[in-house]
Every structure is written in C-alpha cells, then in structure tokens.
Length: 61
Image (cartoon, helix red, strand yellow):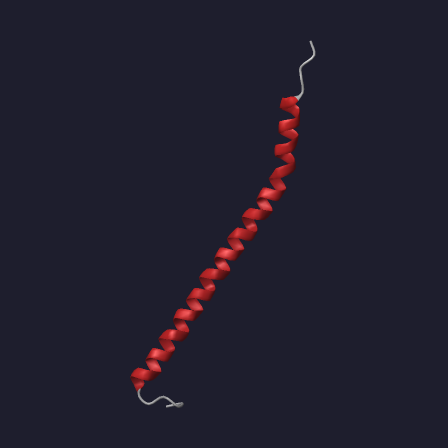
C-alpha cells in the first residue's frame, strides 16, 4: 500500500501527518493572536500618550 509494509505502518504515518498539521495550525493561531495583540497595542499607544500628556500638565487657576 503506497510503499508501506503494513496497515499499522500506514496508520502511523497518517497519525504523524495529522499531528504535524495540528501543530502547524496551533502555531498559526498563536502567531495570528500575537499579531493582533501587537496591532491593538500600537493602536492604543497614541491614546495612552495623549492621556498621560493631559494628566502631566500643571493646572492653572
């Protein structure tokens, strides 16, 4: 069967392929989450800086 000595060897190969595909999927998801978080942090940074600048100004009465 396609170069495999027996069905057990074939199944082991299929399981290895499935395991690698799952690991790749998880890695892609983690990378996407990290990218999204970095984008959100960059987007929030100007807001944080503006808020910090407003609170740092001395009040004049």
